[in-house]
Amino acid sequence: MKVSTHLAMIAALLHSRAAVTAFQQLSTTSPARLASRSIASTSSRVILSSATETGSAEKGGGSGGRVAASVSDKDILSKTSSSSSSSSPKPPAQALDTNPPKGTRDFYPPDMRLRTWLFSQWRDVAALYGFSEYDAPVLESESLYTRKAGEEVTQQLYNFVDKGERAVALRPEMTPSLARMVMAKKGGLNLPLKWFSIPQCWRYERMTRGRRREHFQWNMDVWGVSGIEAEAELLSAMVTFFEKVGLTSEDVGIKVNSRLVIGEVLTELGVPEEKFAATCVLVDKLEKVPLDAIQGELEELGLDRSVVEKLTSVLTNKSIESIGAVLPPDSEAVKQLTQLFKLCEAYGIQDWVLFDASVVRGLAYYTGIVFEAFDRKGVLRAIAGGGRYDKLLETFGGEPTPAAGFGFGDAVIVELLKERDVLPSFEGSGFDTVVFAMNESLYGVAIEVASKLRASGQTVDLILENKKPKWVFKHASRNEAKYCVIVAADEYENGEVSVKDLTAGEQKPVKIDALSEWAESVSRQ
Image 1 (cartoon, rainbow, N blue to C red):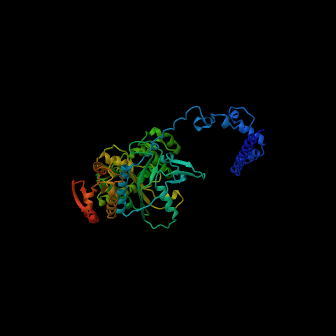
Image 2: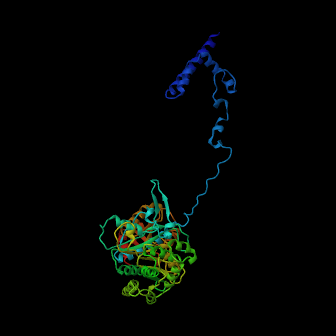
Image 3: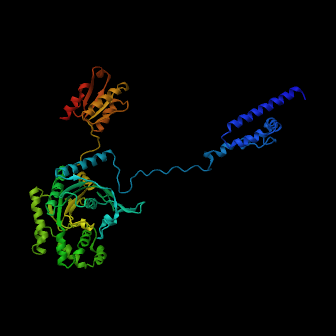
């Protein structure tokens, strides 16, 4: 063999061994290290053979050892691609249902402004009457609401068993939560107490105008006062709210009755006292369904149809004098009602209240005076309702404690205010001032101006992008802003900004250093 041939073979061998060494170093922490050892022990003849037969190996032949699939199969990448893992294209993602659950609401900014306004009216009235605000969890024990008197509320619960195997429910009303809180203090509260709350309540019921499956409710309650002075105070607070939002006694009336009326009639008819509450619940249903619809429930109570017929005939009375004629002499119900109407005259709300014996209220725990605010035009359902519930605490194992209160939902009153065209507009944000810079180089100055005004108590919308004046003024008008502060180059050189009064349409320069004084002056106007 020629020397040149030997030299070529030696060079090839050295090159191949260097490659193996490099492969071993790269594979020291890899499972491939074992494979590299096998490669390292391969004879120079085989290595040289594989090196010289690469071309044939790529064609699927040769004896240079096992050939990787990535070498022999040119389509290996396309076969392992995630985009080709399925012969059919993926179905499109299901479109999101953008509606809230049935019976519930989204509150966009205008809706939130309305809600905030309404809540502030309620809070203002509560403060005028010396009530303190409280709250409780929206999730309560189911047993708090499952009374055995056939009330609709027990069939309308959003209830479930939680992960701790506890039966719970979203609160359908606030009064039982209040009773639980009072009991929890075990006599540690100073009575009388006057508390209010604005809880969100949940009931799975048929929806109508002004009735949803969730609503907010203004609750006002007086605990520890056994006389009807408590009811009179509550009625006065309710009327104060109506007047505050622009309604009159021609728009709204408040029907008043007493559960004692029903109790005295049932006593005369020989119905035992323990059936009074359940009977009241049935009578309340007659406003919505015919007598035949509750026949089965009457039989469960052991009551004759004639009992309810007699009772309903009594409840058609519309004056205290006429109801007194069918009740026993010295009727406690008549005394109570007569005194209440005298107190209403002292409050100056006699035009708002009227006696109506048909008002029963559908909750079993009421024990005395009951009342219901209604739309005098008869377009909407009950606006608010309440009454006395002296025995509620006893039903939970507590001590007898006199109590009275009312619940006032947000949905119906908003519908009524719209109906009477006295609901304010909440489309605009109503902030005081819009501040914007005429060009990007003045944006820092605009920040300084906005900060000064905010420190002075103004609500300020700082335009965060480079917008044209036409857009800014339209934006300010749409949001019902009062002023627009323009930061422009010429005015800024003089240490000033331009202030436009969007109501009067007037524009004037104001020194930047005097913006605080300007803000204070316009706030007094």
